[in-house]
Length: 232
Ligand code: MN
Image (cartoon, rainbow, N blue to C red; front, side, top):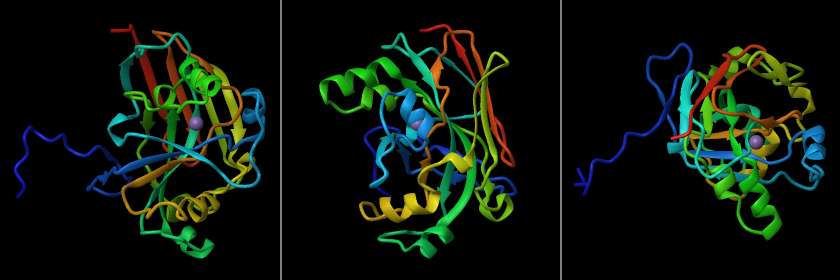
């Protein structure tokens, strides 16, 4: 076994419903602007040519039910409620059929975002890392196997803050399907088990503050929650 110079952190994991063993996380890909109404509220348009992406470190994933301090370096921390799915098979230059059969499980996710830092990136034509790759900013529910969830169709996807509904849409509004995302993304990456993809957020994103309780869900999947405590 390779000797390490310091204690290597354990891989983050996701709970898969019905399995005792955990799903080890390798990479987190996120789809940008995958709902027309959200693209519009961001002052943009959905790119119908191809989906596009940003990434988050797997070490920034936290489980549903977590309490986290309001993050440093922002005064405009936003919620984005999303459908996540986990790869269960390798996919490289995948066909649609290969892509469909590579989806292992689905879950609820929050793509928490420093919106002010993301806007800096847009304004200055710089990367979005400070806006998106935020510690604790990929909140994940236990996942449900694809065979049990069934087809992604018109399931409701919703998020409330302190009991007040903020996001409310259906998965049918997604522009790029999970399968289409795998077909496209696998032109660039050797996707494999351990990779998860967050599929974009519907309209209604907005700021949260310390003390807020975020609660979201997608029909047929485990719900998701996050509590923000005072900044460190
Ligand atoms: Mn997002």
